[in-house]
Image (cartoon, rainbow, N blue to C red; front, side):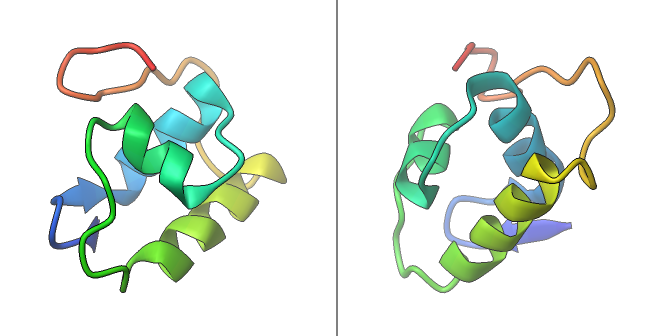
Length: 72
């Protein structure tokens, strides 16, 4: 599901970034994915995904950061 329309980020990409780079802020998630916040409407959704992933309700083991072929 797309959570950021401005940067076209999916929930899977956000979870993968969280598991790979362990960002502490939404700004760090954007950075890992090679972009930055635009309008900011997705920040709450990204924060929720981060919280879920950190409590173990997110991505399966073995995720990799899909950031345009880059590592975080």
